[in-house]
Image 1: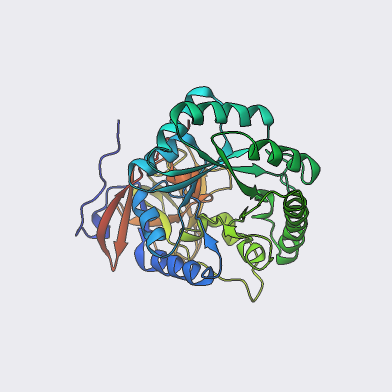
Image 2 (image 1 turned 90 degrees about the vertical axis):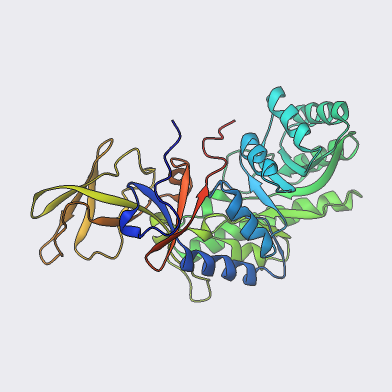
Length: 370
């Protein structure tokens, strides 16, 4: 069943039903403004898989973003349905029914999609020409993450030549995302990884253009590396997503002095449901309230308190000597280990400021896995 709205505008934070996904608006808005200001010289297309929320997408576009990225076809359906008119699906879409949905959306919005196979090129062309629409098509090249993507240089050129001569498709450029670099812990590790990605993208772009095909866009980058891609002279569009929220895993990255810092704005507020011992408290946010792929959540702004264990509906807090005691129904603010999949567990984001609920935002693309 859909989640009951955990609060109403005007409620005190202490009255939010827990567990609840909460955004602290002052920090969130500062993050929006910092990225918008830092990317004035380049196209910003934030990745909406982080928030899945049309209200947030509209806030990003209002600050200059050209559109959004989605990772799934049904995410794109949700955003186009909410009025977003430029969506890049940063994935290969090969299932016939999903390609048909792309074509239906292309009647209302500019729809981009990735390819790394000539077979997929033909399937997209057939759907586009049948529907009387066109797709913006980007070649995904493997720049080091070893996930999807055709090899850089000659294999990518062959695919570009195929796209450029196939009806219903507009060749737009390259998708060159080095996802594995986002959580490398030191600035030097991230710099080296992106230098390699930039070189692959540059070589491939140049080869395509020397063949007489315009390669207008090189797109990629994430919250951990976007400054490197911005300053590369090769990338023309950036796709960071988590910067609006941040999480415990991004907090583990060491930043260089010149790297822009973003604030933690996303939390899960949990309620204390039991205090069975002075050194232990139990909250109502367990395995079903967080993604644990990047470790346990962190306890925010409560010194000496750690989240040490989780079961389905329980989280165990350990209080060290000197920690302020917890009482029944106290609220504890927890920082998710990984923001993106944690957001996907909720139907609502509760936007708070100054101790009060200011708004509730629906997570429009929650559960959009297709």
